[in-house]
Amino acid sequence: MHDVGPAPAYPGSIHVAFGSVRVTSEGDLAPWFAFQVHGVVEAASWTQPLPMFQVLGTDAIIATAPQALPLQVDLTRSVGLSSDAQLRARVDRLNVRLGSEIASLTVGRQPLSLGYSALLPVLGLLTPVPVTALEREHVPGMDAVSLAVSPAAGMRIGAIYALGGDWQRDGRAGLSARRARAALTCETQLLGSQVLMMASLLREMPLAGLGLRRELDTWTVSTELAYARERPPLARERGFAMATVSATRRISARLTVTSEWAYYGFGSRTTTGYPEMFQWDRLLDSDLPFFFGRFHTGLSAQYRVASRARVEFAGLMSLQDGSSLLMPGLSVLDGDRATVMLSAWIPTGARPTRRMVPNSEYSLSSPSLGLEIRHHF
Image 1 (cartoon, rainbow, N blue to C red):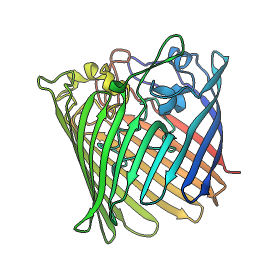
Image 2: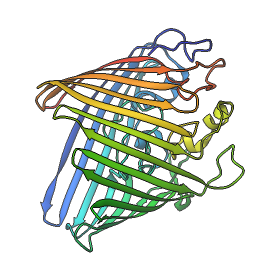
Image 3: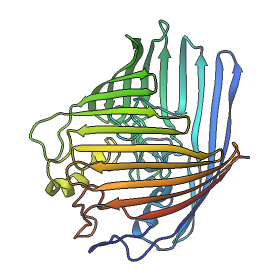
């Protein structure tokens, strides 16, 4: 990572090394009983002892919801090897499921994923991904109880309650139902389309949403709409709307392209309001997507150039200030066992004139180059 501009967050470049080992065990012990356990041991080091790294440790590099947010039972153990290195063991998933395809109850740390958007989410906010997270592929689990019922073919009704509260200084949990994440959902087929209806409560913020998805030959189109009862920092009225429209085209067996357009009503109308939005706890705690402005677009594409090589691209752009974040990548595959990935983060737009004070949507993002090697044993 290398920060540039008149007010860089850190001098020069930062080199980060990260490695992890994931052990999974899951299966059905009976037709009515299933379990899932994911354990991870990870290590990270960095070349500059920045205050952010010293406080957050590996959370500043590969943070996931159970470690970065005070919403989970503490199943993590960390060891500070030095001021610039840390070793950590954590549990990503630990749950049991009772029931059948008609009705089931899942208890424990489990993945909670809703909505159809891949780049600019509106409904997929139950499992928050912290803004510091560079590793976003594996969705972590949330400590929750979920009930799913299928009263008819193609219909699924769900109820979710995720643990809420804060960890106290003495290490004990002060649980609070008011700070929980809860949702009622119903997903069904209607006139050839997939329909998702949701009513949720995200730490005392009521949110109602609707999602639609339809397959059309080589196209997949979807939309998500939501309204939240909360007063943003720069708003006079309580409540705001969010919406996203997505279209995916399978151009060929090798090439797939996705385009998304989003509106976030909580955002600032002008760039002068970005610094105040940056301090809003709803964004810092990942209750809402981490955007300062209102209008955004995204584009992603995957092209398989050979049987074992794939070129990938993702980009996000603010339609208010013109700044963007470009993320090209190249993956080399060795069957299902190994993957080598070379990727980059390239922000464009005005850089901060004051340290850690944003004046464009992606001004706090640093140019980064990453090499990742994965091997599945």
